[in-house]
Length: 287
Ligand SMILES: NC(=O)c1ccc[n+]([C@@H]2O[C@H](COP(=O)([O-])OP(=O)(O)OC[C@H]3O[C@@H](n4cnc5c(N)ncnc54)[C@H](OP(=O)(O)O)[C@@H]3O)[C@@H](O)[C@H]2O)c1
Image (tube, rainbow, N blue to C red; front, side, top):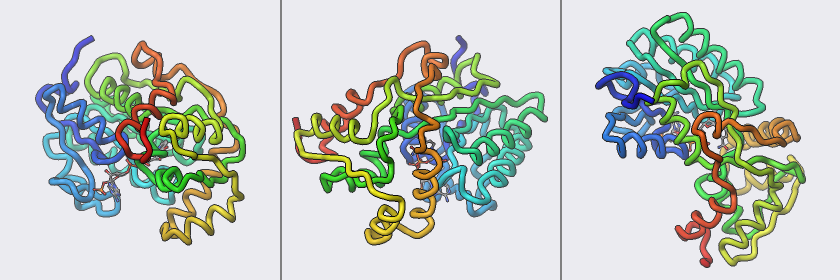
């Protein structure tokens, strides 16, 4: 396979480049000595989904883009924003767009279609879609970290099994799509290798840390009230309520071969993630 950034000497713009997947994508590009620009509100070249005047400067001399929307493709306005961004990107000469999407979210699929339509209308440009399930790193790099630290993961997730996926795997697929040939026009449905309930995930984390950590199923209403009580902004509470009611209803309770199809290897198991995250000390305890 040919490698490079797919676009000669042009830069890759990594949206959300300090977030859970974007940071890993940017690190991998830097590791290959490829030019990359982080696009986020507080990066050197600021990019804000809410401020379109920031988009064109961030796209200067850019040949490919990792598109990670924030906060979620399910929020109102996300589909229109992704469409407009893709239009501006291809007008500015971007040849490759890799979109991070959410598995089992109808709105995310609308955003995928919008980006595909825009890119397909430009013969010289290509898209790849990474339709991902829940990340392992939500337990260590996002709002679920506080739950783990408190010893009780109190979520409205019932006993639905989820094929948690490691952000390292997403970043590997993203970088392959950005830099290698053979991923254009591919929609990769990405999951981890194994289904775990939240209780099983909590037990894995407990085992890796040597701490007592348990999952406590709560209702959507209890979860919303508790999150608001912990100072989580109202719009985030609303988004979490939507995600737990819509996406964690069993529709994603199966694994796929997306990582193998994209990379020719199996995805990382949750127990490896838990062991590695525990070793960083992020959860306290230590084994
Ligand atoms: N978490 C999951 O399990 C999961 C699963 C499937 C799909 N996804 C998708 O992944 C995407 C990212 O979600 P995430 O939870 O992983 O978040 P994340 O990437 O960890 O989010 C943080 C990143 O977004 C940037 N950011 C925040 N507000 C922004 C804005 N207004 N404009 C531009 N950049 C902004 C942050 O940098 P600054 O603070 O510097 O702006 C940071 O780089 C979402 O579209 C989500 O639907 C997530």
